[in-house]
Image (tube, rainbow, N blue to C red; front, side, top):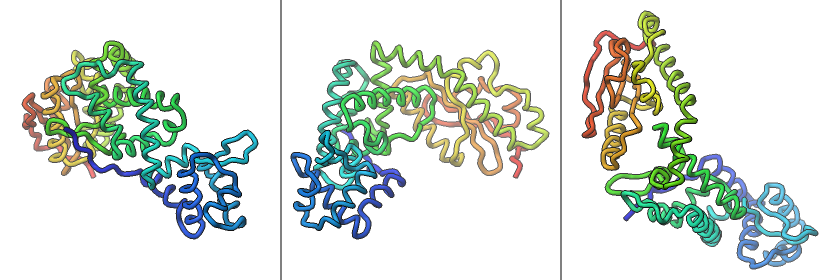
Length: 352
């Protein structure tokens, strides 16, 4: 069983969609787009005008304007017959069930082809991730979420839909390897009492796939320098917030101990944007999920700046350099999912 949370269209996308249907011209736009959506064949301007019962002076400028916006396109070499473009169908999918249905038919067909190319339905995983992901993609909420993230490209042609699915694999690998949850989909799949991002479900399929798992490992190795750079930037930001005397002492001190630097560098160290309590709640939930899946390669290292204090939340306290531990509160995230305080530094304070 799975449950889908409500999806939310991006605010800029929403503004764009709403702007098309505002005012008197917007009403005519809606009539034209709806007419073309419901027609089995493209129409010339005169037939469009006749079908919606409007004057030449009203319809012709609107057709030209919708063409400029990219919502209509000529369907014949002479440029006399008009129909919805991929963008036009994408806009209508947010307003008309028929448009969403047509998008779903195209995406489902392309997903079936993509599945056959990589034999995704034959991959053995702990949970039936492929079935969950397929059901999500077929649902109205999941389909709209997919279209919001990738725009009209995957409904413009089968080739672009297939490339979009391949792009999803890259996103899933990046999210898994980095430890970051990059903003992708807003809907979630409910699985065994936890909510799973669609890219997370795809990552589990990729890791268990004979061929795609090789891509997973190769990307991890290629992205090593990127993770190291981001880790250094995070550490420098923390140094800048500590008292000058402390920052000077830590300037030449690596965050991770040398012998564990490679292992620690396999995941991203980043500064939490939430409070300490919220961060501990999130990492405990993440750890329980890892415990359920038996996944331990991706380590959790977070720095929290909250209430004038700097805290480190980590699965491997022994990987943190001694000098850093002297000036930061240290929380150990145990394998049972509980975060416990290891060291509390009473003297350290963040500069305002």
